[in-house]
Length: 293
Image 1 (cartoon, rainbow, N blue to C red):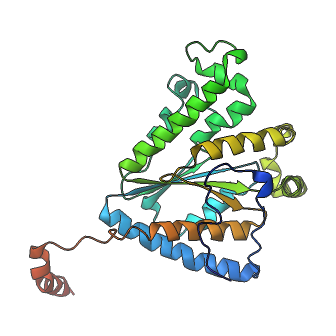
Image 2 (cartoon, rainbow, N blue to C red; image 1 turned 30 degrees about the vertical axis):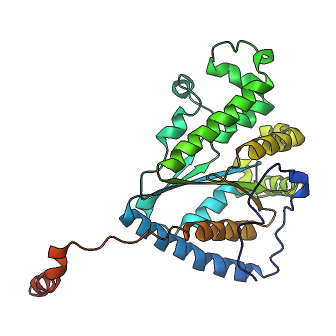
């Protein structure tokens, strides 16, 4: 199996999801995929430790995908070797009353990573141009001036949101936050199979809602909105990557290797050197501690 290269998955220009494969076909066994992932996530954890000590960069990882695309399990499997103090996962649900009293990006600002840390957004600020575009009536809850009915929401409104999101992400990258955006791309048939498995497994039933089928009926609408959002917001500094995700083990490995490939370009991320006084007295400090035995 050849190492993952970023370029086949990075979005540059207009994207058509129907032309993107939902299977990577890495041509290796599940056991080898798991072994490689274990190796790569340890390297990711080592990088995060250095980045924490270095203290000048933060990493924001945005994960989007249709229902059942594997967001939760991917986050669990990819980041479980990272130091708990170094990674925070935020799962954004329906905005609360308090959140709706602020602009739509406010709650995402609050969840941004500190320098030295990773933040993983499980569903992201892109919900504001995805689910709200499929269901524009949700916009009315935001109480935006001059938006009083659905017919007030024009194409210009959505283009403005894309630009606001681009500005938000540009501000982050200019101030030391690396932004990675991943769309977990599954087929409609794979979603059907995963929903059936939820229904057939008693320990997975709780994940199923009748609303899942209502949203599934809007599959084409969501695909179109994803295409527009990804095409308009995949920039050089905050690119989108489309990850084939019908095979969960493949998608986890591909995402991890993309992160490592891109983060390895930060040649200045190193542990800080000890101050001169500490260096001079290292043997003395060791001697003091050894005397306690």
